[in-house]
Amino acid sequence: MRISNIDPRETGSIQCLRVPADKSGPADATGVVEKEAEEAAPEEQAYILCRQCRQAISSPADRIAVRGSHRHTFANPHGIVFDIGCFRSVMGCGYAGAVTDEFTWFAGYGWRVCFCVMCLTHLGWIFSSKGGDIFHGLILDRLIEPD
Image (cartoon, rainbow, N blue to C red; front, side, top):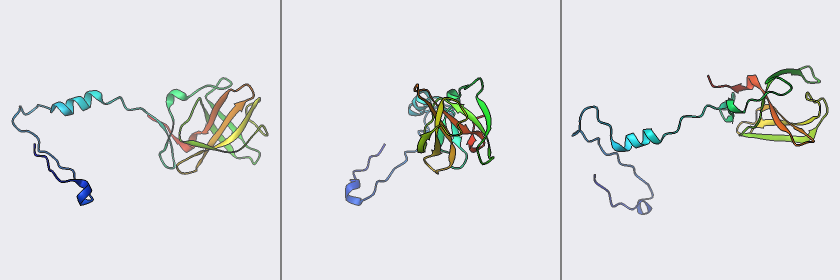
């Protein structure tokens, strides 16, 4: 292998060089570095994504049942119907507004609006009780769930 003595600070750029594969081994041989990379690669985590921008929002393992079910259908005071799923925790979400218990869908819980921090799409609500219990109700048709 040949290493260049060019200092990237002098040229203002960093250059990557590709070393040709060694053809001296058997046809089915894999390089040691490639084998180590394959062994070290963790299993890919499946995430639930924002449908608008593909930001990771939660994981299937965070699905929970609230009041006996993961999935609920509710209408807000304006008559808009939402099909939501309940999740223990989320990532990539922000919250807006003060906690309120007006028109709550879960008795004993206040709520705030939950949105995607990447694209600002309204994804659902965070629900919290005075006892400290917290969960998220996410609008299912605004998410992409893994197969």
